[in-house]
Amino acid sequence: MATSRSCPAESAVKLIGGRWKIVILWYLFQGVHRYSELRRALSGVTQKVLTHQLREMERDGLVTRRIYAQVPPKVEYSLTSLGMSLKPVVETIHQWGLAHGFTEK
Image (cartoon, rainbow, N blue to C red; front, side):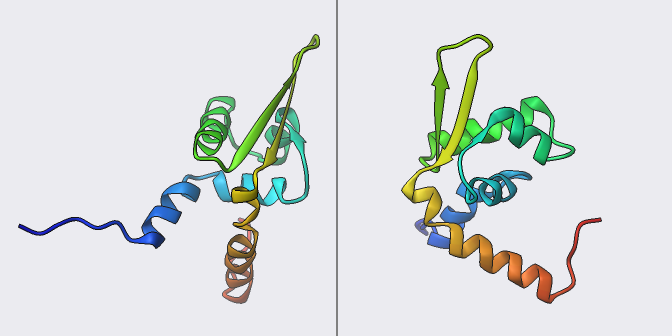
């Protein structure tokens, strides 16, 4: 019987996989952002999908969410040290895309 082993690269891709996660990381590398700022920056993302991806990233320890008790509610997202450790990875992916002619359509 063959045993199943998880590849570290596969585990990393599971953390950052998803249509918007790398883009969310890219914006959060620049600093703390409110939910509404992320929503505006990610044209084409639905509220449901953005919320889901941010919650997954929070669950996985990449993002922290800070809620301010005020009206209207203010929610800010920032990267944890684990999330920040992905910066060189995302920058390398960015550079690879540029080198191979991939740009926004």
